[in-house]
Image 1 (cartoon, rainbow over the protein chains, first blue to last red):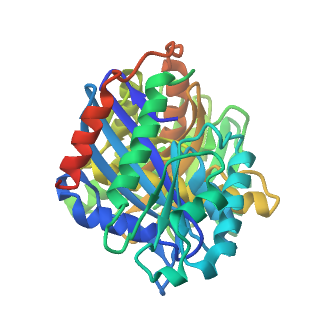
Image 2 (tube, rainbow over the protein chains, first blue to last red):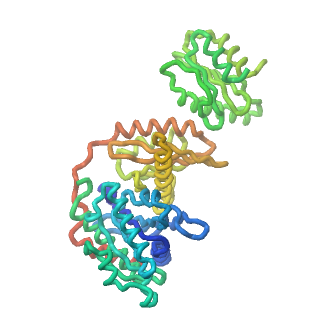
Image 3 (cartoon, rainbow over the protein chains, first blue to last red):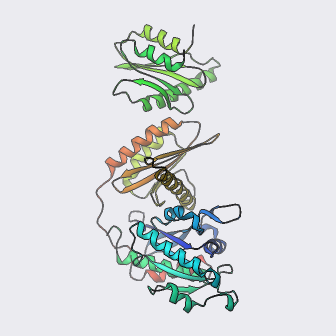
Length: 200
Length: 114
Length: 153
């Protein structure tokens, strides 16, 4: 649940980017870090291996400014995608207010995506979170690759979007769809907060 | 005799509520022999802090470090003696204790002689 | 010092005065900041909170895997400063504390006064407030405007 302080009028939300290894989660955050003015973001924390693969998490705090009179901050996290790191994925997922599930659109990564999506659902279930009520956005990344190597968004919707959540095509390396993904998830998270006051 | 061995000798003195060996830098308990009701962790931390402050005072004054500190209260007292290897010997006693006996006991346990 | 809720201020102020800690951060178990002292930028506070929560979460998980009782506190000792991390229960749920201290104090003092802070917080916590409406119905316009500003569009 977002942390809301009525005295100081502040809202803090935790958004988690989830997905298989090398699907583009860290790339999303790196792009955001590169585009957002320094005074509106913190330094990006990246706990990574020597080969730049996320070991624990990446973390990027953003200050959105005032929304309905509340200073609104988002904390963006990524999880390590490799299968081996499920224990740390569970830890990072705790307390998430919204999730971006990043799909690697390459056909050869399809099974990895499926496994990761199932893993997300299992981990949320273990934490007592109903995935049907958690704000979720699907990002179909790497849509810039040659068409014969990837699945198109409608095909990926058939495979992953049985809930009918927002889904967006993206090319995180060049920024396409990154802002839109964050905007969409932010809206869902804050909509949920507006509809259901904290603590209820 | 180690400092820890010395705890037993100190606690045998009538009126002593407890004795501890404390790490001077961390203020953590290394060994203790305490009666119920004596908060060893608090005594250790505060005693190490006191010893560090006195060390600071004597350094500024150009004097050697004290071999014994006695903090007297209305209902008891605390004695501290620096020991070897960055350790501190601390005794907690009630007001009925024979102060001279306790002083000698603490200094002997700390391996210090006048 | 900056606290999200007023009732945290007095116990935290007492802790700061007695422990001589350089930096203190109280957060929820998911890393959201409740109160802090010693940071200059709120965005740096969030990073520290995320890292601290991550360390304690991974330590707790290690203990669980080893079949050990939960490890409630972790100490990192450097040559000039130390970091003390501990979890504790409050009437508001599980919180975490991160304390950075230097040679002007000691781990023992930090631990002793942190335990007192926990007790003081338990006494000071008021009854939980009933849920209140947070956002206006038209928050989306402001959200979109903020995000556009953020991304320079």
